[in-house]
Image 1 (cartoon, helix red, strand yellow):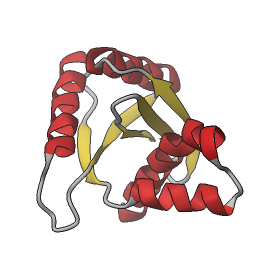
Image 2 (cartoon, one colour; image 1 turned 90 degrees about the horizontal axis):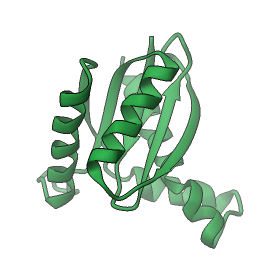
Image 3 (cartoon, helix red, strand yellow; image 1 turned 120 degrees about the horizontal axis):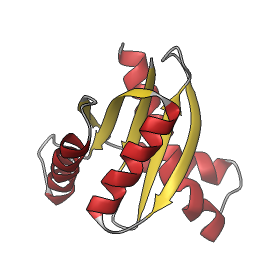
Length: 135
């Protein structure tokens, strides 16, 4: 089964989709959109086109495990997605994924604007990878 991970951000949202067996991370890209409703619509459209059967939404907890404003935004996006699709939406602890994605891109020589364009897609891939490993 194809699974899609979502790294929701204020300006950009990273998306990553597994292979058809739900074993490996495959395609990853970024949506540039600020409006949460339009982000939700774009996610559902992308999931439909790709035959996705489950959504995994990054849930940014603080390092101490508490929830802050970013987690509340993820909860709100989960509600919007739930109103648009019957696909299950799983909140997934995404602590450190953006930091790890940033380090991966630095090691690959990506800097500045080029790094910024793909950072959220790499973070979504890390969310997906973590979720797939848990299965």
